[in-house]
Image (cartoon, one colour):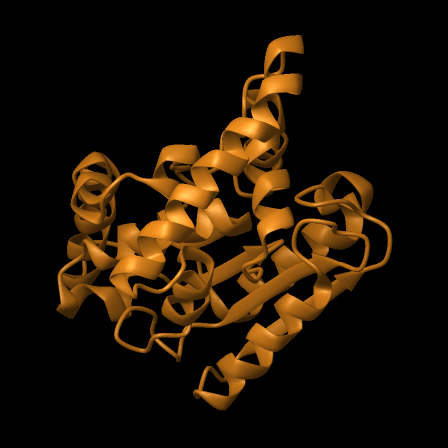
Length: 245
């Protein structure tokens, strides 16, 4: 969610180095997708990415290639984006769309303070937003809570947690890897571990986890580069013949 290009590049460069023949599809999202943008609007915006996935899935189904897609999700914003992408796929395609899923620093649970921290961190860095950002975010969240109370709807983070373990969206046979840290102040490690337990209870069989001690939110690959990419490599080596994205 609103990640800096230089931070995104650290991951794309490593993927290029480890898998030079892979195609990399980067999907960026912002605060709007987490607060007020409708599902239909998000899914329409994701059409180019969906077309890429459908193209490769169709080729694989017809025996035209053995390339497979890997979904690498970052934080709650990335989780929301992934859910909308998968939801927009035809139901008969969802089960075969991905060969492995990596969860980096997600999913969390809904608390007001963490939501303020996450949304404020996603705003443009300037002296003005440093002072005005938190109050604006507080107001937006209060309006959101009021709307949820009036409609009786589920809050966004809880919905994300549930949908990531929804067998109608994500195939329980697809292997998963959770990467998280005890030092993450936005998504506590207990939130991730409870989601892993829930996934196993719901039949998600091949579920691995790597817990770091000191790395910050979505910074595990920077603080523990060797261990991070070794875990990713082991996942793909064990379960995927050739990575696509």
